[in-house]
Length: 147
Image (cartoon, rainbow, N blue to C red; front, side, top):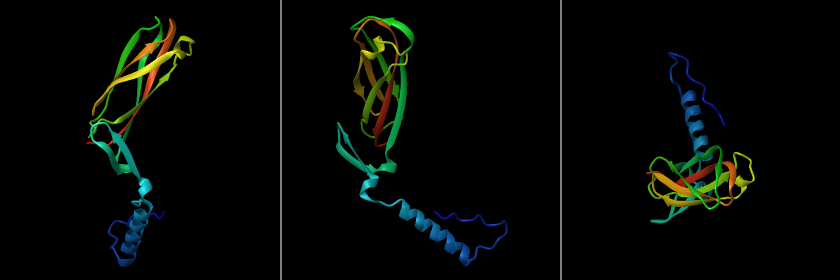
């Protein structure tokens, strides 16, 4: 893409300079077109499918250390977590994945469950499948339409 050179201090703004400026803006407009593949569709729980330009959606990536350091847990117990974020217009779509940060066998037998997703917060818990030492975190991807 062409770059418009900055004018020198005191330089008169002449026709060739204005032409280059307008030409560059037009090139930029072409590159950022309104093609259908530049739209995102987000199926919200309360308002159904919502479409918006991809550039007008919000994506939040979150990391929550649920058990930060190696600790002993018992099978079938649970530990809650949450992540707060800036307001969305509708409850966003949230994906949660576990990370076995301790690298232990007990950390491989854990489930994550989301219990509540609102326009500004997601809550959930992890359930431990076996007893042992572990350290785990939850990675969250939040996708929605901003308020």
